[in-house]
Image 1 (cartoon, rainbow, N blue to C red):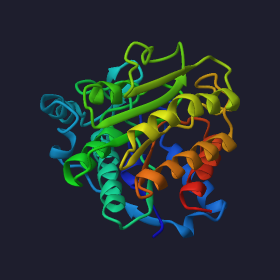
Image 2 (cartoon, rainbow, N blue to C red):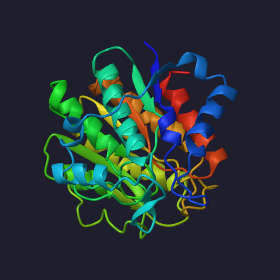
Image 3 (cartoon, rainbow, N blue to C red):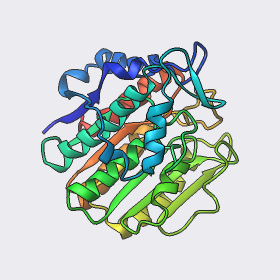
Length: 307
């Protein structure tokens, strides 16, 4: 079985403005790098379906799901907060991103793919049960994890988040669910200024100071993430793969490089091999310097593909 690569052209139609960092070119930068590096031919490529309401309502309040559809403008842009906006195509793109999460889960849990990467946008990990924020509308990684629990008979899943920003939405959704372990690193103090108060044995949030690099990141993983993952023994892993902690990405001030993303992917690959029959679903979150994003995602996918 190969690694599944899931995308859709609709994801490029969501556009929050000419100078917005969460831009349509992000998904193209990843695909261009995969082609240039020779990785793309070894991937099983799929187009993302539209998520169904039942998929979304496992993790979002029904009134929120309905309201997000209703607010989508026929023309122009509607701002939900200062940095999160919808154009005519945003709702459809968000349904594709969440639908990719569902398809990836079905392929991997169903034994049709070794693992999967969803090259989709808008991202999701800031989307709370009842609120869009931080460029996010539906929480894609939460949709995937909940689908695995509901439809594939799993009892324990882990969400791993190495985006530079804390995945407050994922924590909001799963904080009280004993079936879900969340481990994360993030720059702190920094947007969304969360992740400290909610720490527990199932919410293993590890803040990193500005200017931390690979050494600090790897130490946090080895000291906090790995013991938690080994004790929890997840049956499937879901990755919020944000690449905005890269040293070239001026969205924040961490200093990871491609080798760090390859290293963490190897650690997760080995955890999945021990406890989860190798099952990993990874979904794009942040990453805004296009060259660094492409290289980092390629390093991540190279390990997932066993190359």
